[in-house]
Image (cartoon, rainbow over all chains, first blue to last red; front, side):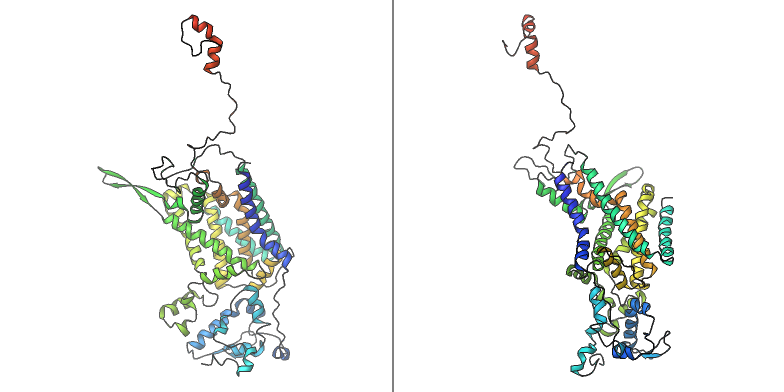
Length: 143
Length: 357
């Protein structure tokens, strides 16, 4: 091979870069986030069912929340959401979610940290777990 | 043929992935095929580059467009006509990062009247622009995807993502902070309120579409286009569209996707249950791209570093480059000739350089 040193160095960089995630993955462990639905409110439910099927919620919860936010902040007349899954009506509010999912750290944060996706909800809203001390959830969002 | 067959091939791949996901072949599509494709990609690239490395480049053949190193009072263009390693390195850097040669692209056109035709050379940089958009967007998108392959997402990936969300101001909380009509319209029209719209997604799809359309609509380019030019474009466009659809319109469970990716990189493959078939379309197209890469024009990814017209210093006047396959030529010097025939030459009165042996 001509200029073998330089070519092998280049190939080593190429292979090395591709190997990094494999080395890290094989040595670092791959704990899945496993968000917890173990809250008192969910325990009390006879049928453990969110407002939409779990598969749908996993992929699309942000879209629902965003539509709700749009509806509420733009002053829409109808701000209740009738679930096609459970048949019940829910107010379009983050408190509806927090009513069951009161464990942000074990629920929201687990997947969001795993995926490194920011939670824009809490730029305005208050974390229900932290809210206990400062008096009532959603005191900011109420404005 | 140049467009239809590759397009059909990509569509067949899409249908295969949908059918495979429907037939519970998730392990095949999500684990076996990606592993095989990555192996073909890495080994194929190594074989290609080693193969190129075995070809001797005996002479300096850089393409130059600046003053060569010459007399001390003539100013050398050290980047366009490098004589040492430093200049060559900067030249390669410009080539790899900003496509320096493509920036010089010229178009030859006939202007003037039929009686008085004028040949005009114009610089044309649309291809450069499309290429830059495509390659840089692709790189940033690949870097963004690293979040699926690291348990703790590296900080630089998040920084890049943050910058890539540059259009955030158009779509975030339009009703709260930015009640402008434009933003509201964009927000409603694009339906990209929640997962932030990435600038690179727009640039990437735009660039690939442009690169494809120029092959279809510019007659001279169409004439040169072969199936192996349009196939990668259709394939990459398919990857882009499936990715965009998956992110903004027909969402999948990204945690499941990451579980699958982490399973692959930790060699403990897991197949998530709740990931939609659109993901397997995306993955099969990416696997196809990886496996196809080393055997296609796309190897310029490695080839650009081994381009002798770019990576050689123009030092032909300073260093003697000897062709490695020169065989030894038997020479008979004049000195030896004179030694052989000196006596006869003297007798015939022919002048000699040395009088005696």
